Image (cartoon, rainbow, N blue to C red; front, side):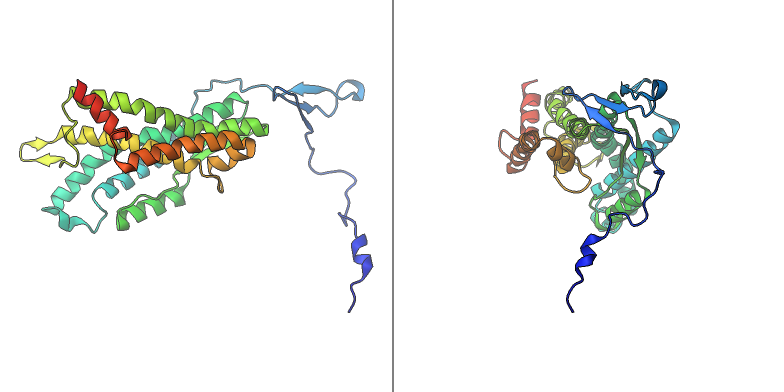
Length: 300
């Protein structure tokens, strides 16, 4: 049966409304990226334009709800990392006793909190500060299902794969500003990674811990603080590099998708830096980030 050509004559909206239910804001962007919006009324019906004002409160401000979500996400993340260090719930055979397994778990959690916690927390705060600079509401919110899934995976498999949450942003921004908000997180990780090499090397040298790689936390004489310090430095470098690289992937809700939508060249350049550093990290050469930190320690 032939298609009726009248089907192409349908209106876009079969039920037009005389009064729109939603008042639309018509934005205009100047060359400097400032958004102006139509005030909709004005004096005697003359419409005016007004520049959107930046966030007026303190940029470094956290509500009680946000603090609660940050605490929840950080606690679950730390538990998952501790379980990863002991190989999960079913890896007790590698320890002399269950009490030793529990002791290593409890010791690993503060080590992982110091090493990996800033990579996660400051990454999100980077998004938050830039978003608030552009006048947006921005607060971190944990993902309970993501936290539960991550803890279960680490408990059963001894690996960490978790989506702790993200900074929720509400406001009107340009594509460029949205790209700035997105790239802030990976740049924070890159900065922490670069800072971690000299400072980590300095700490390892001061405490003579540069040779404590893969050492046990518990020895016959008690705690092996040198081994714990070495792991803090190693995981600090590793975590910031991995987290920054992962978030630069241009897929789904990751930062890379927003950055590449803003500027493909900036995304490519930043991603290439991360990939180059990943390559150096895993080939184990004298120029790997951890090797550089150890070399700095040996000079002290």
